[in-house]
Image (cartoon, rainbow, N blue to C red; front, top):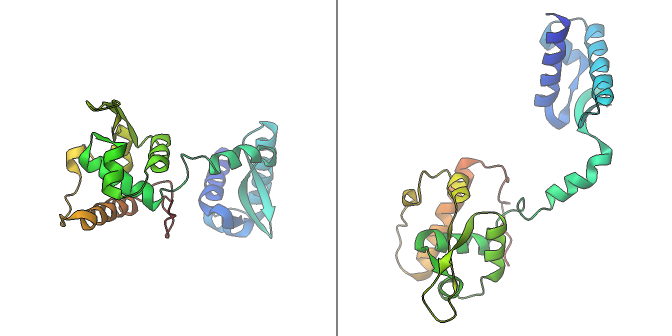
Length: 205
């Protein structure tokens, strides 16, 4: 294996080894190369990332090498972590999304009549996540906003179209809402989406 290929393979090994990292000995065994050669290549990679001002670094921790980020960039990572678009869907938001998905276009008042509680916060979160959007105004007093799902909603749940939503087996009141909510939750788990995406215990409003 030539030097360029070896360096590329080692970089890939660092990536797939994740937070646990990989020892030079293990890396040498995997690439079937001399231990000292592997250590030299890893050191070269370390220097190269710094020299080129890349966004990642190679750290040696407890005898293992692993990829890390640049400490000065921490504020940006925190901003991403706490961004509304990255936070998990609450039970209230998921229930609201279920209602909108199955009964769109629908107004906030109609959603609240079905859920029996205020929906302002849930609607705000869903709009921020680009899962719902305004679909015009209802022909009623005050011309209330009509909400519907977005293309991002279809992508998020892996649906070719809104008509592909699974039909609930229950039909009455809260039981129907619970069934629809469960189906969307199951859809999220089945897709293994990048939000990680709901916590095992969903927060409530």
